[in-house]
Image (cartoon, rainbow, N blue to C red; front, top):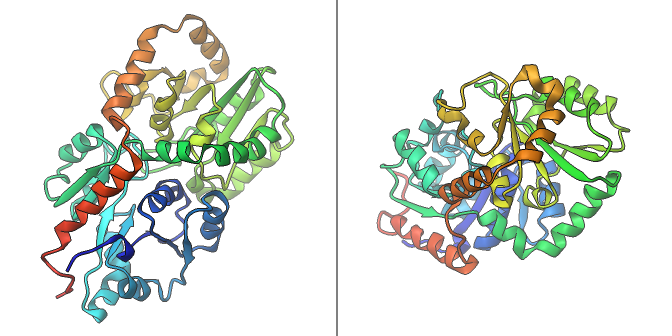
Length: 371
């Protein structure tokens, strides 16, 4: 039994807002629906990805519905978590629902803890480029794949194809809420994961209170930060809500439309840093745990900019100004080299769709029976 695009869908199960900007463009590429279980996520997809067919499905029936209607699901969680939800529906209907894993960013997390190892049961995967392949090999989760497709920076291609729409959205949702500025700075902290990666609570007051008048600061909150400590996050948002040059972005899944208008990037371990390589602009990294960028593979991206220790957060803008004054072409070269290693060459939209569709053949001969 073969699988075609009409039997495919993507899935966001639960309140995983950070998957939206990865799976929604994929849905437009593959001309397939996006199934979600949270009304808030459905509304965000409708608002920011109008060409994607989003279907809201109740938790109680989503497993049986997907097993009945589809043969192949694209998703961004490990197969073990998928089977926790879909095991009984597959058994009841005597049908295996095949899956293709789609990454939700290219951060350097997981070198020090069990992370990528969770993908050991994947049948097929989409990978950005050689860097992700090498990491999966290191974690011994590449050899078991029956198929993989190098998708490159497909989200940037998606943005360029819809550039007029997204420039209008960004002008209203971001630029229209800030005073005119000489430079726009993006601070994109990650959430407080098992590696204690986030710099948000320690760095944010310094970044706001010492912001030069000529600059704007946009803080893109990771959705998980708000879930982890909602009262503390809300207190910060409320304190600086009326600052004319500071904007907290929440419920805003778009990445590349935002990055296009940014002059300077400040991050910690967020995968948005790798996305920002696309634009080859100055980057600064808050080294919250004082790790060694020279020897720590988890700080691989730090080579593309300046690492700043917690004791120096109070003087971050002086560090930035000094760097901008004396930045050498060596940093640009490193950014371009790492971008190539991470994403490779851009692929034509139709070519990429064809390559992904061809990967379905690995499921052709074994059939879809569950037992």
